[in-house]
Length: 403
Ligand code: BGC
Image (tube, rainbow, N blue to C red; front, side, top):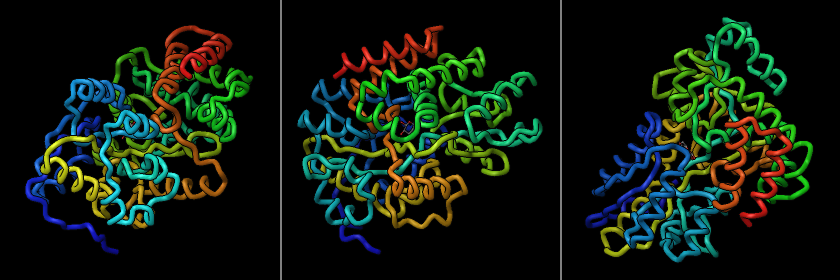
């Protein structure tokens, strides 16, 4: 297939790009875009904001926009795209989207996130899945442990490992990492309909249910499987613990696979991937929005970036490195590993069965104030001895205050 818009020559395309891809696997991935941009004559000014998950990047973005100096292109996703659009600061990239036929190659579930009142306001990069367990294959086989298919099996495996002196769960110390584990547990214990009600619709009955209590109970159990030094640790250092045999499992989106791959490790041999126990698929689509800026060189830079991001080559090569699967449905997955194949097959099955759900922890389901309110409670519970009942009361109050 060919694009109408490809290989348009621009005089001097410029882009200052704000993103949070700073780990080994992430940097290797974003380099694909930097190289393609440069090969088309672009000048890329990098604005990486470390921290993972995007919280620090969004703080940096707010400061830049408030001072009247927005970056040209920003890694932005989920309802935050529409929130910024409502501020009147996003550029319309519909001309590229229409010339490239984005509507024909993107699933509706992804395209909808990229639209602002009928115009295209963001370019999608990938589909990350959140609900994954990663494991050190050697540790599991040495201890006669299979990948867990229920939370009870997970708990039993973790207890066995702990008794053998092995840290069961590699975890880091940022609120978004707690939220990542929490939403995988919530999907597993509550199921897709519960997840939709609680974390998409903010339904009070779901938020106050016994199911929510059970989810916090499991989080308390998980807290006991984490090593003492987790606080402040970045997610990729937790992944490194699994790689190095310092811990058995990590529950993390498939950007963790980008780290294993960057280290030359092979899925199915050195490390294992499996969806967390339960039904459904939590998706997290990375995307870029262009901010309204002056100057033809910047506008050309934005057009070129949007074109490259949804281009076939970038979608293929970036996602091979990043651990995600392409946002486009027409990219062959022959070069992708078994975890990516599982992801694509499960996404298709979940779309059919209605259990494809947006990640709340990664800003796909709710507006920032609402997801932030939930995460504050999740992390306060995880990092204290708060009871599950108290966590549920705080959750309901925090959600009510955030509306
Ligand atoms: C992003 C990923 C990123 C991860 C860790 C997620 O919110 O969607 O692209 O790799 O955070 O930084």
